[in-house]
Amino acid sequence: MAADAPARLRIAPSPTGDPHVGTAYMSLFDLAVARRTRGQFILRIEDTDQARSTPEAEETIFQALRWLGLGWDEGPDVGGPYGPYRQSERLPLYRECAEQLVEQGHAYYCTCTPERLAALRQQQIAAKQPPGYDRRCRDLGLRPRPDEPHVIRMKMPLEGESIFTDLVRGELRRPFKDSDDQVIVKSDGFPTYHLAVVVDDHHMAISHVVRGEEWISSTPKHLQLYRCFGWEPPRFAHMPLLRNPDRSKVSKRKNPTSLLWYQRQGYLPEAMLNFLALLGWSMPDGREIFSFDDVVSNFTFDRVVTSGPVFALDKLQSINGQYIRGMDPEQLLERLFRRDYVRAQLPLVQERMRTLNEFHTATAFFYADELSYDRSLLIPKKAAPDDVPQWLKAVRQRIEEFRPWRAVPLEEQLRELVAEQSWNTGQVFMAVRVALTGSTQSPPLTETMEVLGREKTLQRLDRALQLLAEEAS
RNA sequence: GCCCCCGUCGUCUAGAGGCCUAGGACACGGCCCUUUCAAGGCCGCGACACGGAUUCGAAUUCCGUCGGGGGCACCA
Image 1 (cartoon, chains in turn purple, red):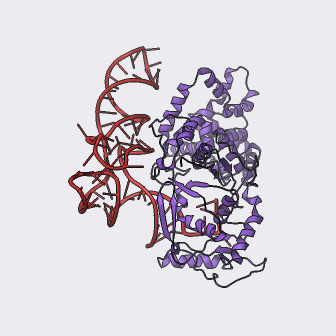
Image 2: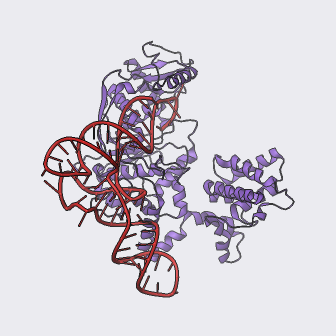
């Protein structure tokens, strides 16, 4: 990869939750290659899942990547010559491409019902057959009317094999018969990932696709689409998957995966990047502390390992410490007081402060790993002790998946819940307040929740429930 | 069940047939420095999954076994 025409790489996150470390991990290498070749790094939002995509999630992805210094040359918010950069705004293109495939006999309409597909699947699993579409509609030449529910499926070759060269793994091959006729346009008219990614990567002139190992098995489908369209496919690099300590694919249940968490915890973006670069890749000279520019000038895919690294935080801690020690005090001061977390806390406590020092006492609870407070505080005055656990459980459940994580809507949720159950608002709010802050005195509850973040909020509710359970037994 | 990827210290990794009695970093243990804690210094613990084959010689090549992971959606 030394010679190198300008490369175009993209990160294509789905705006369906908190910005993920995996997104940063891929972006890091995308940007490195783009910079190294004086090419471009593109951000494309893959919001073809109408049910799960949200605008807030998209916004936090922008924010998190910018925090890390992984800015993009083209994207939904900055524009660019290949836009729009949001898949939901490119629908006509996918439709047109899919219809073209149907015209050319590379794809077909399918009217099989979800019920039939589910039943088929069950049978196959029961018969210990690999699950997959049985191609019933493949040669029927169906032309469903627009009001008739249907999908479009691509035709995979029945024989032969797909061979491609992966930049990190070398030659990979797989018989076509192992891939079924994938849906490329859903019944809601939206493309599936498989169609959209190919169409967009081509139309955005992407030269290198860097993505997780999890995509290896669908690469033959993608290559087949390129072939059907008559387009030249990009180069593929399948990076190893980040793992939990138990070696499963990294997940938020077992690891903090939200970039927002790292930001709030006070990790430095440059240390985070350094750490991420060290997972699966190494500098030719073996140095472990290096800048993003060092990655840019040294990155090659042949130094990427193929086995999945465990995403373990102790090394990140150590690296972060080294960065902190390496800063001059003025720089450090700057960083400390610009921290967004502190800024967010400020309005909550300002009206309660009489001296500057009170800022620290009033916000200490934001930082505690585990609050220490007397269990009896969890039982509000005039409340029945046995009621408290169910309040906390109900509140937890109510907000666990709730979006957006903002004070006003959260307050609405809580008030609704309390009203439904005919509970006492003051008592319920007080119990939650103590669980979250360890004290009966705190800034307004839901504003506190917003700043504290979902993760810590849920964690502290759990902790309070645990305390109450201990007391009961 | 089928297909694919992977397998060096607890963890991240170096290693592309002899330079390997396998190197570094994190973590861990000890000592030193020190009013404490960190930081720093020194020392230590600690791995080529297993079995065959190829070779004068294998962590490095090939095969098998075992183990881990991923995929098999109208999710990405």
